Amino acid sequence: MSGINNKMKITNDLELKDRLVAINRVTKVTKGGRTFSFSAIVVVGNEEGIIGWGLGKAGEVTAAIAKGVESAKKNLIKIPLLKGTVPHEQFAKFGGAEVFIKPASHGTGVVAGGAMRAVLESVGITDVLAKSKGSSNPHNLVKATILALSEMRDARMVAQNRGISVEKVFRG
Image 1 (tube, rainbow, N blue to C red):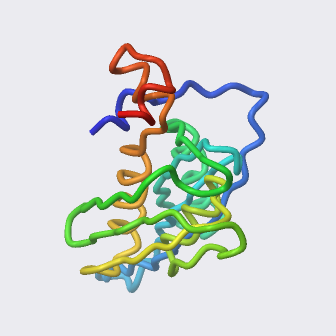
Image 2: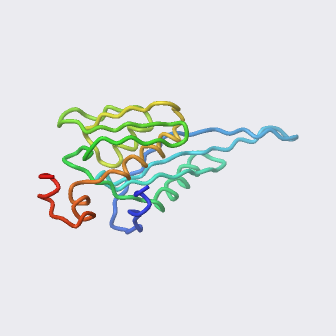
Image 3: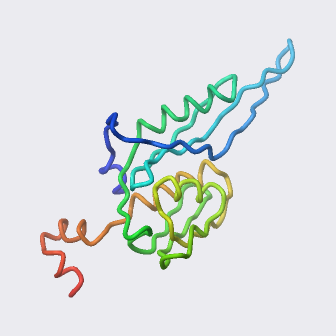
């Protein structure tokens, strides 16, 4: 899990846009009646390679979303982008959710469903092919998608890790 190494500290100059992925109403039945609470999973990103996710729980929807946004801002990671798409294919699994992300040519758009689409658009990816297999639980899909993105490496990162020049990475 290389995504742990590239966590970032929040700086005020980042302009993060939040996106609501899913909201869940939870009912607690007591002697006095029913009590409703809400949980919201939120993704924040600057659409230039920085992304984070958070879960907020509260008695009202707006408060749950606000808590989710604050939680998302605490665990931001940097994702390498290559001309609006991902550098290479990547597969990741979290819980029962499995995701496959594949680079696409310019003009393809974001071919992904629900929770994956929110994550990919928030990070700033404009052209990608993505498929989710297994569970469609939005919590696990968001975590699996961010895990797959955090494991992405571009040529500069590979060259730095190997201690060689970027040209040697391509020549083999």
